[in-house]
Length: 104
Image (cartoon, rainbow, N blue to C red; front, side):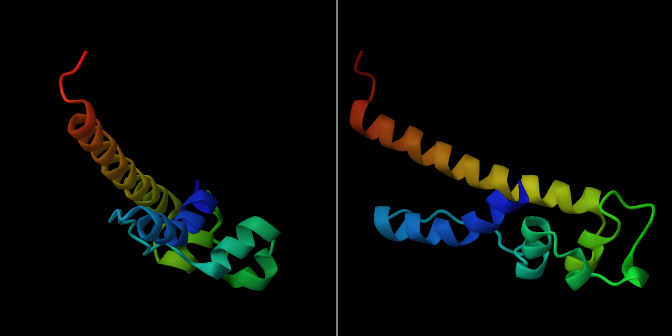
C-alpha cells in the first residue's frame, strides 16, 4: 500500500489539474528514501545496524523515516488512503445525482 500511496501523492495533483477536482491526500508519509528502500531493497543505504529495532515489524524502518512505529504508520497510511477514497466517492455520487437525479 505504501508504494501506491507514494505515487498517488503526486498523481492526485495531475488528476485535479486534468479534471478540475480538488482531491487532497495528506503527504506527510511521503519519503523518497523510505520508498527507495522498499522498492529497491536499499536497506543498507537507509539504515545502519544501530538503527535496527528488533521488536518492530519492519525493524525500525518506519521509526527512522517517520518517527513512529510500524503499526502507527500503517494506521496513518490507511487513514490517508481512506480519506481520499471518501472524497472520490462523494464526488462520484454528487456527479451522479447532478446528472441522473431520481431518473429510473
